Image (cartoon, rainbow over all chains, first blue to last red; front, side):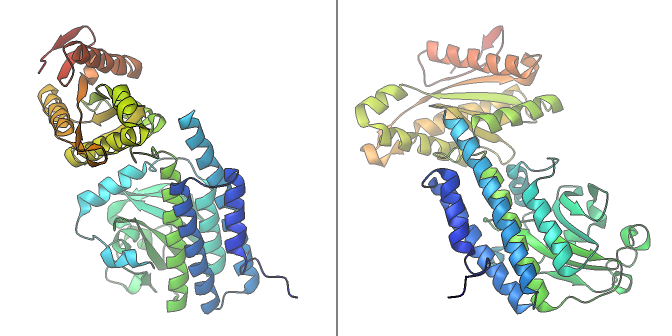
Length: 85
Length: 331
């Protein structure tokens, strides 16, 4: 069985990372943004493939964007938690 | 590009500027998410320069720029100012042959821009706040497929902007959090903008919660924030400072203007009802302090708090404006 590429399983990866960062489930407003982020990332991957962007570059892009989103999501969660405490 | 493009408000410059200011992103330090995107655009498009440009009133300011050592330019020379007037990408294959840009100082002089591709960054409410762009020093064409790639990156830039804004918003009311509000108040105070601090506290909120339950209390807060949003001018800044305490910053006003707005907010809240509790009505007390009442932000907030305390003392559901040591004008 072929291992799925980063570009193919990004939705699972991003949602897993988001939920892990949230310690279970995301607040609704962050969930909406994360869903939107996944959808827009999917559109980007599709657009890059149609434009003939090298698959390695597509993978690099997805990995970079997912990694940076995870960090920013964690920042947002910490700030929201700080406001509530 | 998303369906948002079809709702683009290209003729409402004032609303566009307000939408940009609400993001509270101008003149903030570089952030990794934006740097990653401009870095990827540079690589994928094989261009020397990529930028996230936000179009402010008189300038374009770069939230991220790679390949050029500048942070802003005048708006009148900004290619991206043309991009925000479009619903899709703007492509300039050779600026020296384009009548819009041939005499532009960024083309005739350093950095000698020759080709440009920009995708508008569109907010959820339909304002083009800026553009994500790829710039080259040689003439070149960008394919329609590459335009779609840039547009998709621009959508991700908007997501980044929304995410950073979300951390500054109160989850229940959508108003600015205490931290974001205090940051804004500090900025306004330092700018010396003849501002008013309007402090609003819901009357008997604990009783409302105890008698009707916390979900109704939440509905009261949501209805109050809706009343504030509907009655404040665009340039006002509204926040929830905690519990049932809300506040409005009103820059560029005088005592009469501040009192008039504060009183209209009090009246709007008193006219609001909550359907989830059999049209429950409620009121608020309001304290106002002008910026010149204090030497620092803490003193300004204390002056507004003192006015609010006086409003409570006078029987609630009223507005008091005063200085730190001198109160007047109760309703």
